Length: 499
Figure: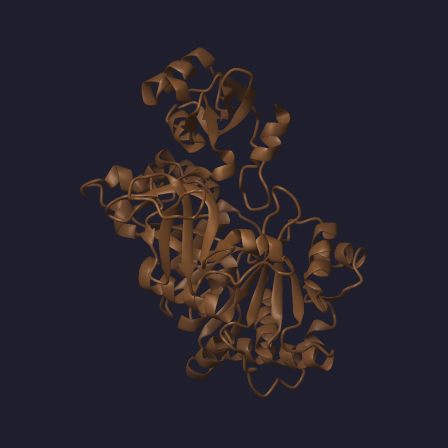
């Protein structure tokens, strides 16, 4: 089933329901949203683009993003979203690899990309966009099979060229239904606020908000601005957001500074990187029980596990502290296991590679059979993440397998050390990597961002109070900030380069 049918159905039943907003201003109802998307579909067909063809989206968070996306889907085309923070040459490489027929752009990104690619670029904020929307809408949404591609997602590429994850209609349906079953409810009274890139996790969640007829709000600044987010939450109410853990930390810090209590914020789903226990406790202490955590990958988008609202908020529950350090239990649409290096399942409590299978798992990487063969073994997606599963089914992440530190034959998981470092009041951020050592194989190096002066002897004593002696860092490197990619993930490759 074509995922664009959800927009068509909502437009039929709730044509006058406000749909797309810039800040406080409504720019389209669901009826208008659907009509404009179908006009885009008709225009794309006039350009010779058809079902299965790839259409790029290189835009900031603007309402036209969703109109172009659903227009491409209605035609049966495959969207190729690209983070607006990418360099134009990086976006051009993705378009070439995807063999895209056309790319929709927003104004500030149009000329830089148009200058470096042969793919035709269409500016959704340019003079010709109104003419496209005035086209006769396509009569009906194209038929698509569940396993037909709908979204070609390129991984962030922290260790080389990104790979194109093939996301099907079935996967998007599974992701959305898993969200409604396991993560949170959504109604037409709710608001999705897009302060994170639509090209990534935040954008994936648009489909279930379309299904339920919720509002879609783009901040006027087009960026992550904490005070603007708070103002929009107070105005729209019942606001849902997807945030990276670093964004949650920033929201908490600014809210405490200005005395904002979270009025209007209903749900914040976080994921995409490690959330440290100290940070989520501080966030909940201030905002209350509005948080949920998901764990997923592009290869199984947003729906491997969920740590539910009650699991996070109920401090009286037995084992609450351990659960808080986990990423929750398997979502309804997947099977979850932990395996050894051969892919054989391991007993509860043992650490191994996290594996997942089900309708939400990708069929493979675009034009990369070798990478596909390595990633999917006997039907299981091998995530490359290490973890263990408790008897109650809670998955605790350790680290990426490539980030594991082996010192003197003993495994050290960087996240354990990072958690301990962040308990120190002067440590703002921390990231731990292994460094080659002639005798021990590797030793532990901690990169930290601190507030004020820091005595490393004091920090060393602090670590000894919280973790085993062999796990403590042998070296502490103070940085003004940690290097991150466009999605806010710490680039440990860059930290290793610094060594």
